[in-house]
Image (cartoon, rainbow, N blue to C red):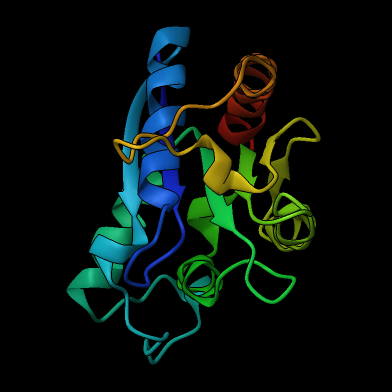
Length: 189
């Protein structure tokens, strides 16, 4: 089994990211290839980057950075759940990524994006470019929710359609494939 970290990126009051993260968590557990853990940036609450040394040095001074480092280091793969804010992914996610460097490398990442008419795809594309600079392999397969509020029922439950379930299954198949391959690369670096 591989360690999958699902990172929920939104932190503002009223956010919907955690319910989408729980949905993809269940899909990943059903897949059976991953030990799954959600890392909710709204709960982790990293301050704006305030470490004195560059992340390349791994000389972390703060306990929250050390804890964040340990969680990311133990991951074999990621799924980022991101909203789209102002044509991009949320600043807390950018901040969380930039806290670290080596811990991210040689791991695959799927992206679940949501938003209005664009389904968060502009945020996902921007995130893919930034992940690649950290030596993360972002998958081309992802899950995108346009007008995502349509998938929230009267009981405030996230209920995606069959197309979304199939997209998630495809992404998870690719994620396990890339995770297996990158594990070999990571061990031989």
